[in-house]
Image 1 (cartoon, one colour):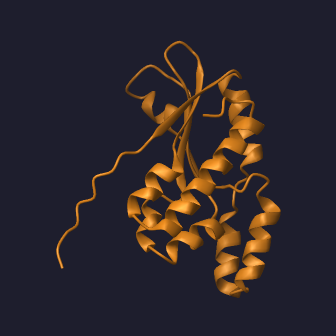
Image 2 (spheres, rainbow, N blue to C red):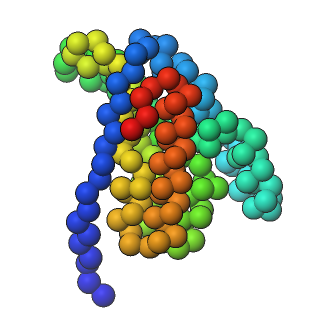
Length: 167
């Protein structure tokens, strides 16, 4: 076996947001609820059926996504540069990721999705995410690519809900 090099192009969506940073961030965090860390530990410990895991995820994800992690990048970067609001997230859904993982575990490089909400130098708010199909399509597996396109649609629905332009 040898190292594989896979060159691929990712499409980044840089979405302008009309709302102020704090307001948009609050709406995003409401639409993409946080997965409590103890919930993951409980699921692993109790080993419920996958049907139960899917039902629990569906019940808690109004737009199909959960927040697995977030950090205030702006606060950290303000130590070296002018302060600018920026929050980074890992957003995804383990029940959707599983549908790709079964075909190619390497997809976890891009699942969950990385997103940011930030202000630019002019004070405008932006939401940024790589188009999921551009990441997952790079694995060359039609089943994985199909799920990536499904995630594109979920991102578009989330943006529509948040009153942000849909690409």
